[in-house]
Amino acid sequence: MPIHKKGKRITDAEVKEVLALLDRGRSKTAVARETGISQSKVYRLWSEKLARDADEQAIQQREEEDRK
Image (cartoon, one colour):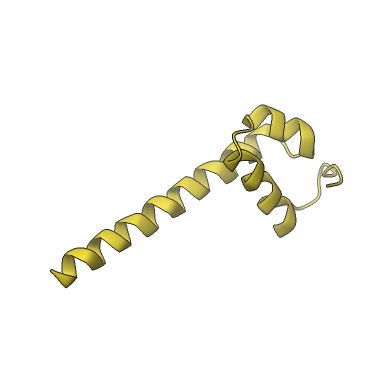
């Protein structure tokens, strides 16, 4: 993947690549260095993903409780 250019918006493809690298166990610092996306943005993308995952899990738990 080409290096991100500073000042440009991050594309959906770049977001997917960052999250895929992090899911594979790469450090946030290494991902930032590899992709050219700032370390703060990498951290923000990761925390947003964790929040989405937690929301989805909470919804699933509520649905299971409602079925009982």
